Image (cartoon, rainbow, N blue to C red):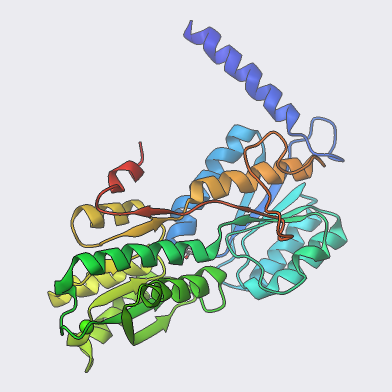
Length: 341
Ligand code: BGC
Ligand code: CA
């Protein structure tokens, strides 16, 4: 029985491999996806997106070639040149510099290779319109900041003691991600705006950005802030991602201080910090579905098919040629639902 099941599976897999053969590739040739991650040192990209890329590519019967761009756009440009020389069927690219999209798109266009950009949305006007075979997979950046902001506002209202100096103003510090990254910019703006929109006054005590969104940065900045002149005035720690939040938690623990603290991504470790009462909330950044959408679009583009054909993904109708995966609030009440099954 088991053997028959395996046989059926093998036949199905063989069929699906054949069904994802690229246009123009030699008969029976497998689709080859030339992909990168802007930095394997990034908690979210390396911990959530990369494993799902690897897993899901196998289920699609496509060959994934994944490289580390080590946080250098020049390195990524060279990696793309190599993929083009190798004649990959399609490119799945995580920009290092979101303002470098035009040059990347021009390379793909010159080579006639379809391109799926993911995670870092191009910021240059007209970039996406410059090639008919480029698409974007990511999120609606502002949504994460809005959700994080709403969680903080409702918790702030429910916990009058959080206003340590009782002045009715939220004295906050903010750990920002990469400057110019649409997610970092929108999260920074929207999270704070939620208080203002709710009629609550805010005072920014400090804000520091990190192009690598790293735990080290979160730790170092938080530690420095705690011992600074305003250290005892901090009432809230806002983090653009969980990676930096983990660092801030370390620094707070080392100093024996407890403060309300929020992140974005909903990494497994964040769920544990929520369970332990060390984090008050995060926002699910659904990297698993972003990876799946990227590969679904990639194999269809490689076959010359409409990129969302036969999938549940929807392309935005605003001219950005984007599939945007929704964010979700993760709180002490619902975090259990986000534990890996
Ligand atoms: C994630 C961050 C990550 C960044 C990388 C964001 O969407 O929330 O954790 O560092 O993407 O580009
Ligand atoms: Ca206050």
